[in-house]
Image 1 (tube, rainbow, N blue to C red):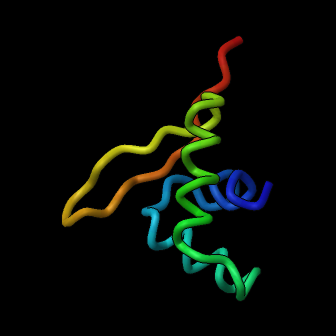
Image 2: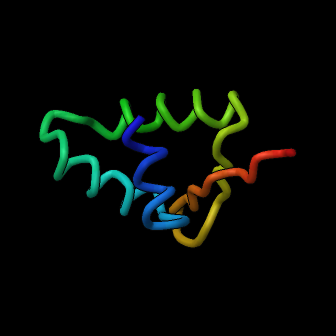
Length: 66
């Protein structure tokens, strides 16, 4: 999944930074689609999304439990 790949290579990103990277790779992706993917990944426990300043959200990978 491209979202996870970006987070693995670049570390924590804001939702806007992640959206910009996805738009470079897939021109037809929308912000709503990104939100659905982020929600799914968060429910699966693969990422953590936290509120940041001015309505931005910080997206980061969760550490795998051994």
